Image 1: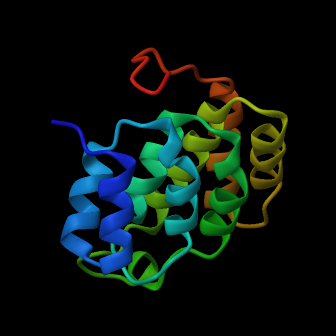
Image 2: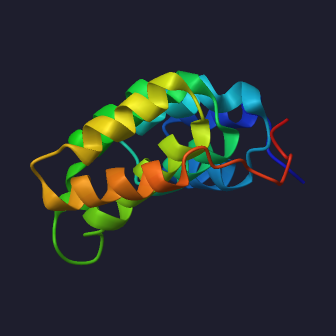
Length: 142
């Protein structure tokens, strides 16, 4: 059974990391995009990679600014080496989410990444541009 926007909202209000993780992994409503975009920038949970993936699948332009911010200033646990040190994977997911959104704003964000002084960000921006626009064929979020 898929989670609803209300289930996601309840997990956020309780700041329940496990419930949030479960809700994000099962969300099936486009209406959740603004809340997911907000959550991408919050630091009380560890679901950023899953959230950016869902935002890419949803493909709503409301997420572009949050993704731009997250790729530039990712959460500390993603940056740290060790168990959670997934910085480059996270940045790449951000670029692919931007490619999936298919808007002027997302393309501009990818162009800025492709001009970054950081070679990883530059590479991911170029990758995203090479796939833009990237339609999602699942129609789950129509």
